Image (cartoon, rainbow, N blue to C red; front, side, top):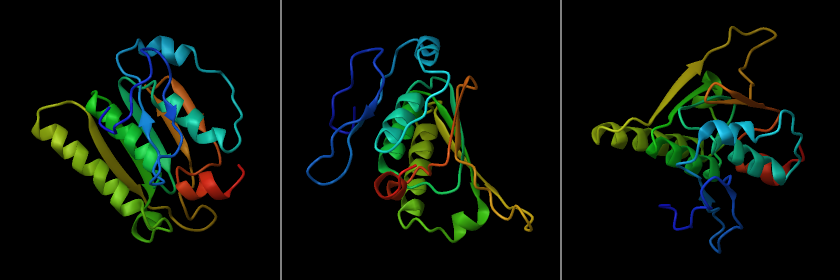
Length: 178
């Protein structure tokens, strides 16, 4: 992988490896395996607590071979950016819906830079004539009782749903017990 790590053996799920000395995470994504067998191997119901949550989410996301669709309230996790970029490089189309107010007035200081990197990766793939892409839509709620889009969901290849209370942020991983 381009992150300097080594990919796990073919067919093995990806995950977050121990933190490097600079504090950043190294993420490896398995590619080239049969997607259906990877998705079929995932549990029907799985409850995870920190620190296992992100490792499980990355395992699920790494099974994608066609699409990843997400609704995210906040998004700034470096490992998630690395996983999504690697998937895009292998032809996976990533679509994300985020809350309009949280996008323009984000509580995650790293969110704009991380989303910008996904946009840049998508543009580079388009210029190279490659398939992978990143598409972001903003959802503006009408106010009242449902003033924000607070979903934290992922759908992998339209075959596996991943949801919960955990934001895809470093803060959620390091400072909260979900």
